[in-house]
Image 1 (cartoon, rainbow, N blue to C red):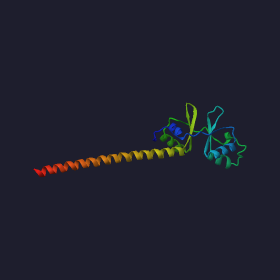
Image 2 (tube, one colour):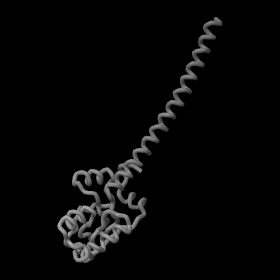
Image 3 (tube, rainbow, N blue to C red):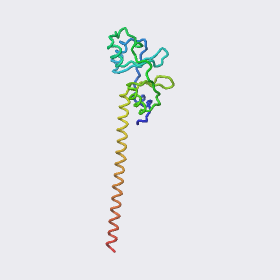
Image 4 (tube, rainbow, N blue to C red):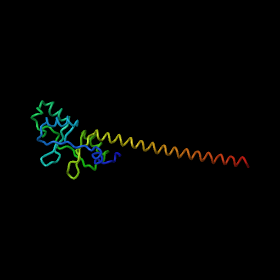
Length: 172
């Protein structure tokens, strides 16, 4: 686990379904699904089955509630974020973190060979990065402890040799 890990590894570790709806579904259906699953975004699929948009809590707030639209009669196609940035599962965690930061987005649909593979959130990336850093820190601590033990053994050996030299010098 590292920042050079691929997004495919995160998807595999998450082991969660990617929740989707069609452009023709209503906002009320999206709200129900997001609420029941405790998720912040849905991938919206087009007629061809490809990613056509994302519907997030931010879309609900800014494009539905703020405009006084009725969720029971508003299609997702009318209020989703269209044509979201999609990335390949081979992208590294580090590059994905730059992508969400630079583009100021929270969710990245993942594709491989044109097929939807999952959805990664900025939270997923942050959790992976924290775990990777903890692992790296632990590895460094282990190396330091190993080096310190070797140094103690070397110091003991040098001290022992110095004592032998002193005994030899004093006995002559």
